[in-house]
Image 1: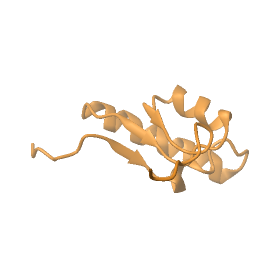
Image 2: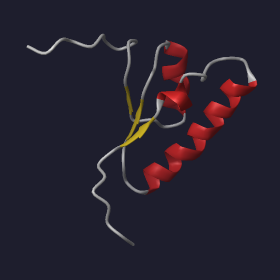
Image 3: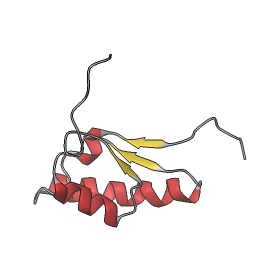
Length: 81
């Protein structure tokens, strides 16, 4: 196996944005993340889910095993000092 200089795997907002919607796209997005997270975990790496805007998204992603979350639900970006 090749060693890669990877410390974390980010799950792009395009995957996470539809999660929580009662639509086919929302169901596909959650199914996709359910496939990604165990694979990344098996490699011993944490996941960062981007674009989390609602507590429902965070709850669903937490249930599938996402390690970390980013976006406005948790805090607005701060300007550089």
